[in-house]
Image 1 (tube, protein in one colour):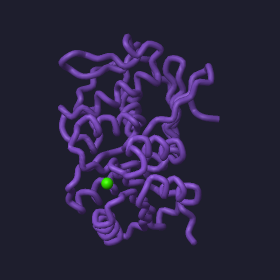
Image 2: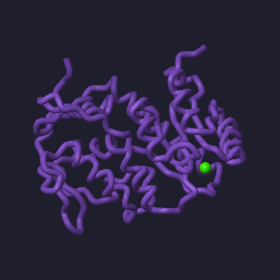
Image 3: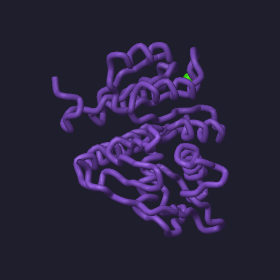
Length: 244
Ligand code: CA
């Protein structure tokens, strides 16, 4: 068996969906694109499987019979650093926003185009692959204020010992900010590939999530300033110490 981090080995996608027809469609299209899949029909099933499986990504239906989908997501987040795509039949914006806020990498509304789902999955995995490669490159640590941001493993560490694990999308956003300090960044420049439009709320959601983690006072942020009508400004001196 190949090592799971072997780039040659097919990625493992776990599908958490109680509707067998939907699960079958997803399994089919993913295996057409050479992914390995495991289907879990309930949250309990997933949480049990996660003890032995190390998926690269989980596709989680928010409407599961045995547990609220958002809670499932949080449990997965606590247990695994895998990518997360939310699948929802409820066309409620609040669920999507909540999902992103809780650390999902992307969301897909049902009914969906199977190939669109594959495209999103691939884009998340590519991004994560790139993040992993960044680990072996210099400049993997950014220091600002009291914080040490490890771009290789998406952790934020304060000298007090306070530590946060950022979601892929939060870390991606923070990377743009620390790489471009003290200049106004328009929403377009902060957008990741998953964002639909500059009006999409996901940037604001991620900004407020980051603020809650790294600002002493999230209501009066010292680092991530809102520049009304323009975008955001990362106000800090950023150092890039060589590790070791
Ligand atoms: Ca369902």
